[in-house]
Image 1: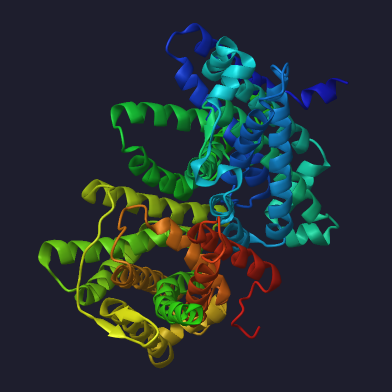
Image 2: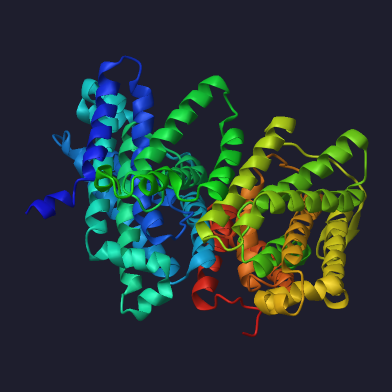
Length: 333
Length: 295
């Protein structure tokens, strides 16, 4: 029994960090904006890590899943706004729709792209977000390039007061829950057969196959799980926080890149990595945008290159090496 | 009437396709030799576009002269990025190389934005038109096409006739074998990377001769995606394959635009972009080695 619980010790620092973040945000005035951003980046990293970190595959079209998640929430709210008495349930329906849509898209993309490996996989996915965006704009589905604005519907269903509190901090608390959930799922995967299979295929896919591991199956599991969390993050952090959706914004490749940076910065394939990466990235981005507005990317680009060349295993990866065999080691994965 | 417009558009498509093909040769060369996908490809095209713009608007220099200038600048950039970054990432996992090239792209975009600002620019170089019967082709487009064909031929000759060219070919086949035979593999990597970047930056000049408007630091993204489709059409690791892939892509793009234009209630431009993505996935699924290869 004791052994069973100790398997989940690494969750303690994760929970503690999110609790501290939440308390800082709620109790120190003016901090919520920063905390919300940190929560968003940590959740994004945590979700992307399940695929990128655990399989080592680079999905450049990741933001597409957040995009369709945002559309899921937007569609649920606009299409069901006329039904009386739905109240807060409409948000839940929105999340279910977001999950459904991101799952469907990830199944479609995964069925094609996951047959490919390495560079070919990255190339296949680099067009997913752009392709989907141009599909929405070109075929003029879901209002095409005009996007959907649903502030009025949200106010009408939930009432002005609930809606505004949802936008100011409710959505961020949902993001926090999603981030914690993603961390728990990550650890569950790591501690189960899935995690071992994914580690094996990340290190050497051919060898894993020879050992009788159904690599395709585990890749698809990781891909869909990761996409689902992306859809939820999109639905809460984008659709609920800012109740509008424009195709060029929600399919912007820079979010994928930010997610990759966060995962890599913290340490790909580790549990704490995305959280650490999200905090470091979010805090530095926030203060850089105050100190040197407009220069964040110019400063980040060389930093990323330096990290890739000099510290490819990330912050948590290095920490893991330093703390090996110490008592702290079992808290850090 | 429709048929005439359609053939006219297809002719334009071939001319554009030659330029597209040339703009992809650098990507294929780098992938073929170093097995690195240059995700920052479009940013280098953008650099070429800005070199043309700057030379033309401030110094009044003809865009044709800008081609060798851009090529030289690109070679320089290629050597710098190779020796500072890519050299350490040759055998690294994909994640590292993809993110490194992407970051190089962002760095270039932000540097150019810092120097020139982010508004859309253009230049106006008027040198007359030629009438091809079904369509009227501006001379600038003709020059761009001609320049692409000449550069592609020169690259072909360089590969086949020079010692350095055969060294590159041997490394593409088998880098260990080449090393055993006394080929300077490290030097070949450096040369191929900077040659690839040089070609890409030079292609930026030719592309602006074709489309002399809409030049801004973030113009490269669309070209990156197109270049991937073209490179995959041509088999990803062969520069000549890329050139012919470009011709095919130019035809598909212009042909499908004309057809989508007939469907009411859709935006043909966006659908054309969507189609190129579908083609990319389809080729990767059916024949990842490229449609134009025999393997």
